[in-house]
Image 1: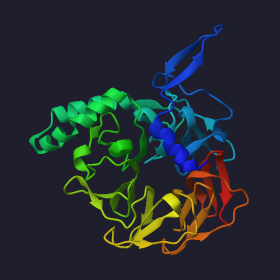
Image 2: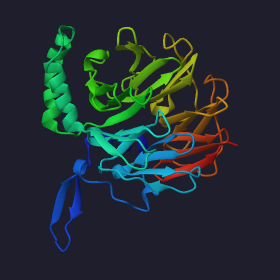
Image 3: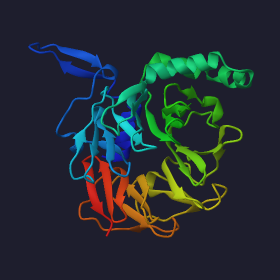
Image 4: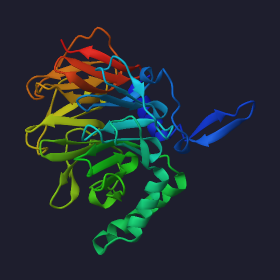
Length: 358
């Protein structure tokens, strides 16, 4: 089965709206909302589906299936499961500092930790997000009035359908200012560490509500990418994400790069590079027929891409070309990070796996 297609289908289908918990000494199942059910502790958590991984320098933290969050303090050799208050699938994780981090996923869940990922609290879910959108655009300023009028139907639908819209990525500039993006154009911003969130539907050129899969800075610019070849760049002066035209109409799963080398990647091994902040693009040949699902930059500056069928690609010329490296154990990859310039940690269907780059 196509891994990325399965993952996205699971996200947008919201298959885990509720969890089944069997009552003691009873044949009848008791249904509990996963938003109110803590993730179950399991020794298998590091070996099951993990969707995202981050390194804080001293610690690796990965998130995945049924609210599982695991962390490692010995470079991925052993893992410990975190305490998580929800059972929703988690899709992305980001730490702007060693102790403070955020994770997002199914059911509009946003989790936060202030102890390096050991314990997590829920800051937001799909129900609260719909209420925030309703309140914000009902009490809009005059400059937002037009946008609010066109979004009432969308917001009403979000409320009626319940908390089934996933957030798909998270990025924080520091411990207070951050963004979350997701399905059907969801995008929010916080300036107080997630204590409050502001919807930005009216601050992005996305009237068709394309799914937003990733948000990430490259150099001094902040980018969002998603389906139908959509890429947006933050105009800080205008406080708006403006659309950038690209030569591809398929889905972009992520963005990476360095100053002077902006890279977007996605379905069918497609990779495009821009040396002028998105004004023009060139296709980069990968030789990979499957979706490119994750990226990282090694400490020596090389750029790494991984695919849903286990390809590992490395560029030592700022993304102009990529070479596939041979790996002893190919694993379906959802995300990747590095331990050092010679070692990667890839997560996916089979949990976390250590892969040498040499």
